[in-house]
Image 1: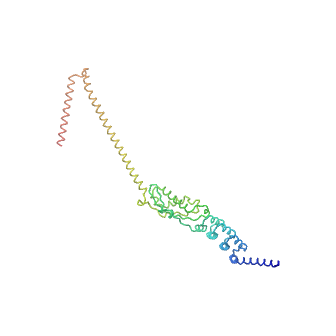
Image 2: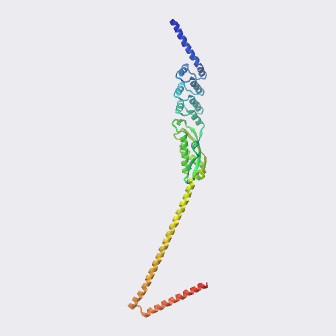
Length: 340
């Protein structure tokens, strides 16, 4: 075989290969060209060699271009090779642009690679979602249990409206943290209420206190509103009412205290009575002692001549006469009482 023949064969082979490649990528190339998202044939071949689906990258670039955005094929390929979801990122970019949300491809790709659904995050930013607190799937009763200062148990259910915070999606806490923080805030707010009646009358006060606590800090969400969906007093049929128990125990304690105070006053009165009786006995003893001194004083006066015998007899007669008069007076009073 002559060198010219070999050269012709090689040239023919090269032409056939290029023709095959051109025909293989012709459909994708024409689609990109006609959509205004031109991709070179070399870029398509490079994608195939790097095991990147050309159709996927070209379709993503066409959608981005038609949406008025500009993203080259290299970032799309890099994101695909990193294990990201190119279609989801492109959908998120288009939705964010239409909703006037500042979102770059690099930011969207980073969020997607972090394991978050960036398209769902953008939708949540546009259409806030409602979260039940507590989580019905993780709570047996479906209600929060809180106790006011007066000891009355309240059962509360709240609905939290949140929107996604794109800047905090990477590294921000999830819905579980929001539910836990809101539940803690509600329990704390009810616990600071003086009575359960204040909570029942103004449940919006609880919402305002919890909302002002900044519970969405370091989370992937922004709390729009906290609404108390249901609030009621815990009944004694299904659970012990702490308030009723405390009221009963308090009344019993007050009763025992009053009884103790009354018993103390009675004991003091009895002691005072006994003391007065003792003092009466003491005074009577002193009277008897003083009466015993009279005969002795009279005897002393007789010995010293200060009292004569006739004086003594006259005093005895006076005493006898006085005793008789007292006896007569006592008899008349008795007869009067009998006649009455």
